[in-house]
Image 1 (tube, rainbow, N blue to C red):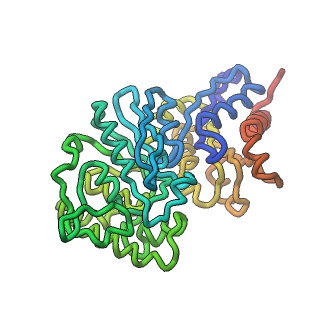
Image 2 (image 1 turned 60 degrees about the horizontal axis):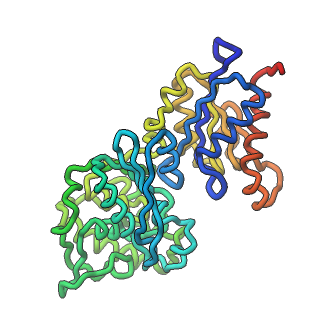
Image 3 (image 1 turned 135 degrees about the vertical axis):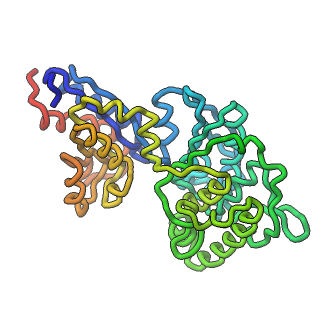
Length: 383
């Protein structure tokens, strides 16, 4: 507890609860519960994300503006996506905002026909604002095109042996005979790209994008080998065009169905998404002098400790001398022992049975009530 027992400093730094609440909404709900017990507390809200869904919301919670734009979705239909511009001019793109795995329309298109062209279109629009530093979140994508669509959206052309254009979709990549970069947006040379991802997989092979992440996007067992081979064929031509022979084998090339590969070709720097967000929202500064940090996510399990948002937030808090507690939508009971080695208290909204509809509808209220109980457990409240 803070030396001033009447005014404890509490940092609230959760990820989104996917399908129910954004990270800012989660933070507000937790704050409301704590305020019931400790109205005098200094509550510092720092909504978090790890590069996937909700990254744009978390980064813009610290200020900035968002701009909607109609671009191509994962299928051929247009979607209204958004890019963000932070107060210092840094641009923000969220892949899941364009080609989300939770988008029912995009997911209706067969995975072999999906493309990331729209993300390239969104990046070009962002460059029009003058942004020359761009953060790109790679989580939660529905595509598996090796980043071919991104490159085409940025002005590259995929050509077959007859010089005709090839569509940047997995089903057509085996036809690529050359890649024309004459139309690639020249502003990219002066742009610092930061790819936010915790995925270290290469582009191809048994640990590559198609084999590991393809099935959750709709790639069938019989499609894995031919699609992986087609993407490898495309990658060979991309290596020659960009003079970057090792891009496909670099860590993170397999992120977001191969978007990581295209970003490696463009010279992007790869960083942990949660660490980037923590820096940008000022989490290290917020925990200075704090007693307690509360973090959480939709569901916590053994993977939480592998660099996901709650783990990164806890590490920042512990380094500053504060304790960290976990408040998530659900917690895998088999992971409680390992989670308890890091977190001073692990709390779930749904340890008991409940319906999905009720959990989603009551998420904010459940969070507020749970945060209140956590605060009562930690602090002696004198009304």
